[in-house]
Length: 289
Ligand SMILES: Nc1ncnc2c1ncn2[C@@H]1O[C@H](COP(=O)(O)OP(=O)(O)OP(=O)(O)O)[C@@H](O)[C@H]1O
Ligand SMILES: [Mg+2]
Image 1 (cartoon, protein in one colour):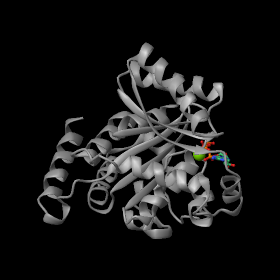
Image 2 (cartoon, rainbow, N blue to C red):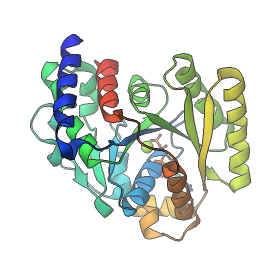
Image 3 (cartoon, rainbow, N blue to C red):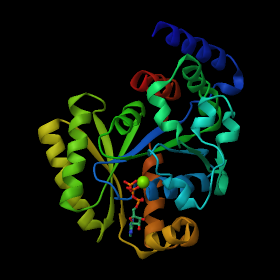
Image 4 (cartoon, helix red, strand yellow):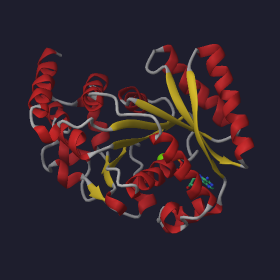
C-alpha cells in the first residue's frame, strides 16, 4: 500500500533525525512451536527476566490468541491490552505493564483478533509503536502460541529471529518439522534456533535436536541452530502454580541455570539487525492487512 509505505518512511525519517532515537533498535525474536504445551511461555517469561536482570530492556508481547499465559505465569493482570491501543483509547505507555527488573509486558488480548481487520487509523497506530521499539527496548520476545495458524505464522514471519521450542517426544519433533517445512517452503526464514525443553539430560536433548537438525538440513535446506536445553525440573511446575517465575523463586535450580546459559548463548556474537523494528511493523501490517 503506497500510502502506508510513505507514512512508514516519513515516520522512520523523523524518528531517526532525533539523536536519542539513533539506537540500533531491538532484537525481535518470535518464540514458537509445532506442538502446544511444550514450554514456550515459560521460556519467554524466564528468559525475559534473565535478560532484564542483566539490565537489558526487555518487552514481552503475548501474541497467543485468547490465552493470556504470560500474565498467568507472572501473576499480573495488565489493565489494558493492544486492543485499547489500536482504538486510540490508551497510549503505548499505558498498555505496557511493568514486571520485575523493569520487564515490560504487552498483552495482545482481544486486540489480536483486530489485527486481521485494521483500518487506516489503526494501521497508523501500529506504526506509532516504532519510536517505543527503537528507543525503549533491546529485546522484543513474542510468545506466538503453537501451530501453523495465520496469527502464529504472521508473527514468526515478521520477527527477525525465531526460536523453536521442542520436547524430546516424537510428536513434538514431527509437529516442529511441519512448522519448519512451511517456513522453508514459503521462504519465510532460512534459519531458526532450537530450545529443547523437558529433557532428561543434555544428552537426551542433543539427540532430539540432532534428529530434527538432520532432517531439516537434508530435506528442507533449513539451518536449525541449537540454543540450549532446559531439563525436566519440578521447580518449573511449582513456579506455574505459584505464579512466580522459577528464575526468581528458585534461582539456583537446574532449570534457572539452563536459562542463564540460554541467555548467554542468545546474546553471544549477535547484534540487532539494522532497522529490525521498522521491518517488523511493516511486515506485520502487510501480513495481517
Ligand atoms: N522444564 C520443565 N520441567 C517441568 N515442567 C515443565 C517444564 N517446562 C514446562 N513445563 C510444564 O509444562 C506446562 C506448559 O508450559 P507452557 O505454558 O510454557 O507451554 P506453552 O508451549 O506455552 O503452551 P501453549 O502452547 O499452550 O501456549 C507448564 O505449565 C509446566 O507445568
Ligand atoms: Mg503458551
